[in-house]
Amino acid sequence: MRLAWLTAKAQCGRGLAALLSLPVLPQDAEDKSVTLSRFFNGTAYISSFDVSQKDMFESVKRVTGTSDGDWAISHESAADRTAAGQELMAKGDRRGFGMIMYTRVMDARGDGDASAKSDNAALGLPREDLDEWTRAAIVIGRNQPN
Image 1 (cartoon, rainbow, N blue to C red):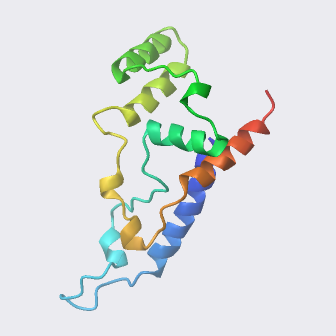
Image 2: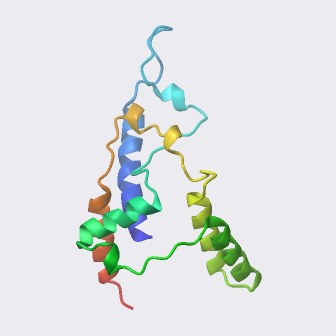
């Protein structure tokens, strides 16, 4: 959680700075440049990465120097994972909510994929290095008490 917050804070800070640096209005009707008015009463979509579970796993393997053989890999369909989360919730176990929400972001409906809405390019924001943040997450994880 802390890693996601760290990367989100950094990219959101850059995004806010970029937004506030924009001209407020176009110069005239022909001006197609990005202006603050484009975001008036709307949303600016800012992201650090657009990744899948596989992308995250591949990053962990690159950063740790491991391969598939070093991991116990199992597969579970989104439908089965959602059902398991619902069962936990029905028993009062709140971990089920996290399972359901995480699965919804990654399932085939694409509810969690906002990459098509991203304003990163319009705001001149960089694509962050997933391996850099994976490395940071591993350091944070190793320094946490059990």
